[in-house]
Amino acid sequence: MAQVTLEQLTADIWVVSLFGEHDISMVDALRDRLAEAFSHDPRLIIDLTDATFVDSTVLGVLFAVVNQSTSAAAGETLALVVTPGSTVDRTIALAGVTPPIVATYPSRDELLMAWRDGVRHTPPDPSAYQQRG
Image (cartoon, rainbow, N blue to C red; front, side, top):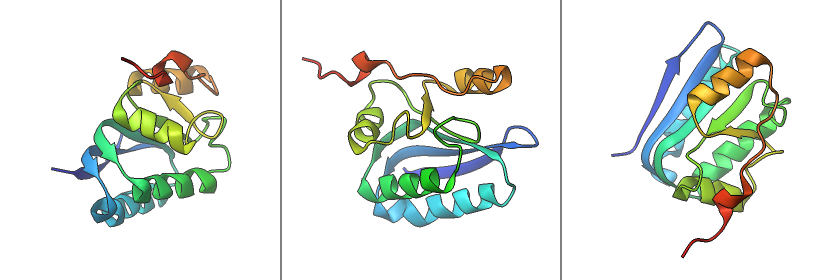
């Protein structure tokens, strides 16, 4: 079952997480969680590690969020967490929602460490996007 959650990690870091398959039926829930997160003027993590599918409508919402975040490319206030090589990772790569457009990380821990250490961008692993088999 698809679900979108919002959690506050710290005073200024919020996480919107997607679970399961996301299509047009989940876009309003995604927009609502994102709007709620942005009302706190946070640094925002969009965690896609538990998403198994995202369609073009969800990608459209992600593009809009990236475009609204003025420092998204630097990874200062917005970043995606996505499992390298997953279906969702390949989908967002094909759509172009990748560095340098937005910073992406393979885990929340790596992202939080990068933000703590002041790292602005983690380059993608090109081998994660190669066709297998």
